[in-house]
Amino acid sequence: MTPAALLLKYRCVMINRLDTKKKDENERYGKMDFKELGISEDIIKVLKQTGITEPTEIQEKSIRPIREGRDVIAEAQTGTGKTLAFLIPVFENISPKTNEVQVLIVSPTRELAIQITDEAMKLKEARDINILAAYGGKDIGSQLKKLKGNIHLVIATPGRLLDHLERKSIDLGKLKTLVLDEADQMLLMGFKNDVEAIIKVTNKKRQTLCFSATMNSDVKKLAYRYMKDPMVVEVKKEEVTLENIVQHVVETTDRKKQDALCSVLDQDNPFMAIIFCRTKRRVDDLEMALHRRGYNCQKLHSDILQSKRERIMKAFRNADIQYLIATDVAARGLDISGVGHIYNYDIPENAEAYIHRIGRTGRAGEKGYTCLFVDPKDKRVLEEIESQIKLSIPRREINI
Image (cartoon, rainbow, N blue to C red):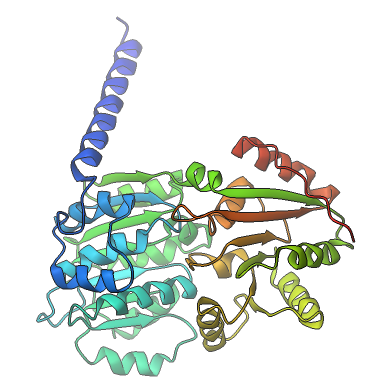
């Protein structure tokens, strides 16, 4: 056998061993309830009060290895329960009597940081843990004042966290666990250098958890550079989600798109829906037009004051707003129950973005509906989407 053939054989054997190891680990850590996963009764009680009685697949596979101190790389879409997959075990591992920052969760957007904080505050009822949310748009003075107390868990965006590190108001020297949430978006949004700067000032003996909707090469490079023998957890949700979602395409022109959307909204009259636009300007224009037509809607994008964004999200979660008009970045990480309809006013950039958008409906076995509005120039992207999801999306006829 030639040296090249021997090398190829060796690589194949190693890949098979890794696949077998991953399969064995996933089987070992799967199919358990919260009690079997080692979660304490007080946390189980809080979960039950919020309607959570059984762990999702990502929680089944992640909680125990995280509790055991393993580094974990988890690939899971929004809506799979991934936030609690890392929050529950890190809450169990925090020592409330120890006066230091023990867990740091880094997220790419303020909206996601707020969402993680909301979930953490619910679990706080079971544990006397002090939590600091550090993100742009929130008064840094109040954050600095709070940091003089005993903070156990910090939830932050990269920019604001680096600000605190420069001020030496946060010490990560004794950090137990670092969580990088939505790692793919963190890198896509240009935070690679920021994330690496943060990692370099953390305790070298820390546990590192990397959660991501997609595990592309950039995420893998970042993860393996800073992690120790990580366990890989994969939960594929796209196909399951798509099975639960009725998809339609409305063929129109940009000039007639507004009228087409309103015609569809009037026919469907959904309880709650998200309408996606390509840019902040498109969001502004559409919200103004829908308001003039009498629709109950609000817009969400990065130019809106943080305090107002938080009020809008609270109102939408409470179903006081029927239509949320948003950009992809502003809506990243949103996980809101009750959203039965997704309207793609502007076609997303690619199939992956389309799947991520529509994945906000059709969850937990519920049926969802999505409608994509396209004009002739969108033909190529539409064909790419249909090819990737292996479906010729039915056309919806409307009268306008």
